[in-house]
Length: 278
Image (tube, rainbow, N blue to C red):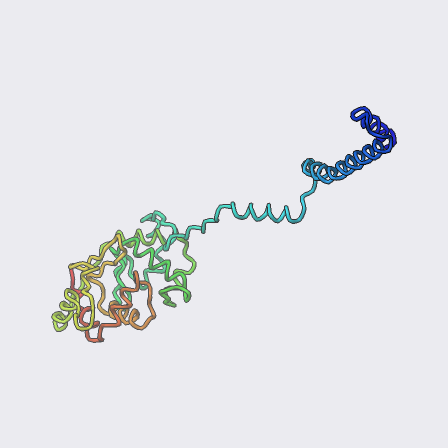
């Protein structure tokens, strides 16, 4: 610092030779004070400047907890939404049934439905000639037991141990058989025909032929069963089962809704009329 002050003193004398030694000394001291102050003011800026030039975090340094949290949040935000698993088909996989294999599996069916699917007891349905996909649907729903939409203890005992392939084979066999004809009670034809073909406008009953056709042949694609020639007693029992909530497996609950609007006499008449359809 002394050498700098001496240098300033000499410069003052050279620039202004008329100055006295005392004045030159004062000018040199003042100039030195100004220089020192300028250096002191410049230091904070240099420090800030040096701070701004800090090198990036060294590669491999462990991230802080806040950095890890931010990373996880970004990853979660960009993660594609999981798609829900596609539900299985309502009736499960549709297997191809084998007629001959099905015929060999009818031992437990014969007692009630006959060797060819034409039962002789009116409480049990004729299943010969019925649509294959409809038979598969009904057998699978019987197999569900009490938790299913069509629980029947006697049928559950017969089908509980059947595989899907067994059911497909049985359905193929019975669908290939020919159904026998039935006969209507002439005293019930008029009322039964009116209900089947025109419904009941007053009570909101839809005409049966809307789904089952004018000849009772149903609709295979929609799994609406064939009705013509079926035992009147069996149809009567099923309409009551729909109405009482014991059976609830019709598409969109159509049969449940319609049966609630039918009187006992209407059920009896239309059931008889259906048996005579051909």
